[in-house]
Length: 330
Image 1 (spheres, rainbow, N blue to C red):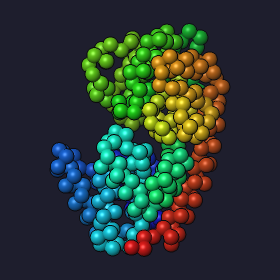
Image 2 (image 1 turned 90 degrees about the vertical axis):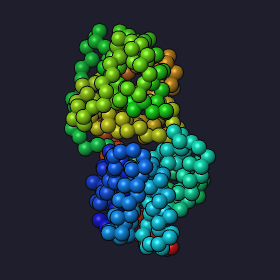
Image 3 (image 1 turned 180 degrees about the vertical axis):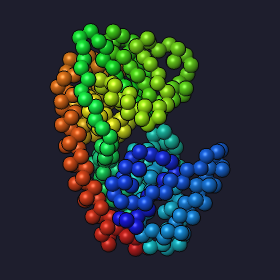
Image 4 (image 1 turned 45 degrees about the vertical axis):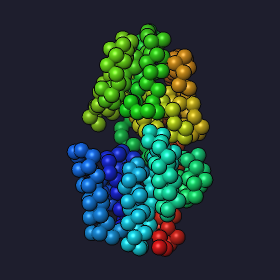
């Protein structure tokens, strides 16, 4: 694994965590500027790393689908003796944001042609198998940050909820805002992320118990999470383990998550689950208040459980990638 190269075209916390814990070399080929300049710089930079380092194992973050198709084609054309493994986020297995027919076909082709496809849960692994791929399961590691002490919830005090948001297509932002209107005196909602992506009317029309924090520096982000009573991270995607949930576990904050099988199976204690219906979200916030003490204790226990499980899964994955069968025979 020490000779393995992890290539990515963006900076992502999961990638950096995997690199640090699996003993890989990280190459982030990030180029600013307009799309034509960015792609040209990323493509040439990728080839430069492949020629210079000749790695026996290449792990690729997917997205970018372009990066993965490029490296898989490079291996076929050059007959390079290296294993190509995709670390596939949900969009790489089931395109939602870019769901055009061509993208779906290319995504499935990449899954079939990679030696392995790493996914975060067994439900995504089943979809990889259905597409003709070879799945490996490895969730995100719980971030190695200091946990915060449990915050008291004083009677009459609003529950401070940190809403993890990027304002992407899969996030039910409008429904969360409607839920905030319904629980004005019970909870405050602090939204992370670049809220300028929202229509101006949505921002000005938000209820008074909503605050948009904007994009936060990493240290400020963790401070806001520790100063919250609970963390809300909802998605409309099936089988998606959201990053905010791992982060909340790390600092010891109860969760409000989407009512999906993957999230309920993995974050199985210290959490309340809800559909994207505003009424359901408001009711879930009420349950967070009512069960706050017990949920805080459960989330602390979950941190230790997930860390132990991750270590075992990582060891199994490393054994598979280090075996002769993981190497390409092309």
